[in-house]
Image 1 (cartoon, rainbow, N blue to C red):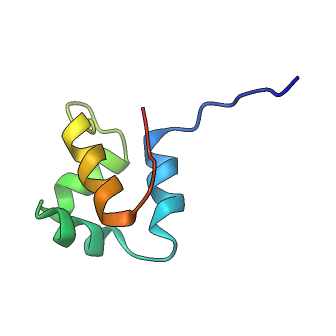
Image 2 (tube, one colour):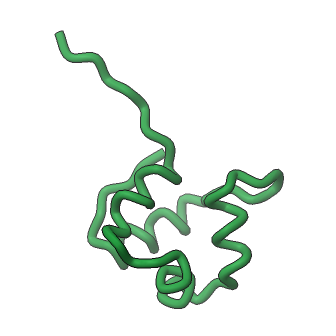
Amino acid sequence: MAIKIKVSVQEQIREALDGRTQRWLSLKMQIPEDTLSKKMLCAKGYEFTDADIQAINDILSSTISK
């Protein structure tokens, strides 16, 4: 029996970036770098929306999910 471990959205993004920077991703997403940074740090009031995750998946050709 396989045990499923839930990986956070932030960790999935870090892995999918595969050496690219958060700055690069923020430019591709057309959002301020500090906003992306706050989302990556799970700052209060800063969460990844479904639209954010879809945009990231499109940019990184990934399958990130909540």
